Length: 305
Image 1: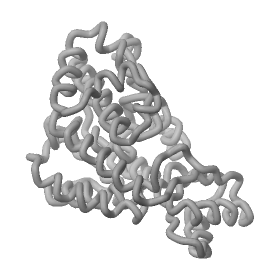
Image 2: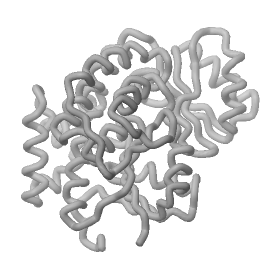
Image 3: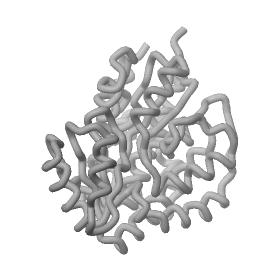
């Protein structure tokens, strides 16, 4: 019997109307969505299903929108008798992993995600920063080049696949870094359409706020183990989970190491649950042997077994 993992995408995978077919055509999905929508003090349903796109792209809305869909899809998957031994997520996808693993109730998971989105939104408005994707250069070389940047903070933050690393920092430092990286041999260094320098040390204030917020929730360990973004290791205690919640907002996403860790744990099958197929593409570039299936729409459940 194959060992399975559930993985969940992060910010950037969202689109207006995601999950609407589930809501309108599946009674269980509607029930789960309605319970999640009711747990928040703002109208996530309208933003998720109707937009406009500019509203959905705001971090405070994007993050709970993605996680709500991930959680509902996970519930439907389990109704089909499909479960996993491990869970992991890319950036905010890690919060969907907490809900999927039962570390938090679905409602608490979404409330904590909404708090994260609000805190990150607030901090990113204070710091004039952004992110850029660097292609065609080894991550260790990227780190070395970034040491030469003189105009401010810029760091390698998302280690997505062997030839794609995302950097984040202040606007000026980011521009200098992109220029330097191209001069030193990177194929591309292109700014991303995001509102802040996520996962960089400039976001530490958001981490401090999240640390305090996390104390309001009831966490528990279950048989489904979560792999942490910042260490690519299993979170073994509630204290470790809370520490990860704190550090992850201004710490790295070690996605390459996470996939390698899942492989080392014997995982042969991964379900990417949520909008888009970004993680499936990254996983195939990290390890071609792992089977990846995507679960996003009602149609994806048709031939699932």
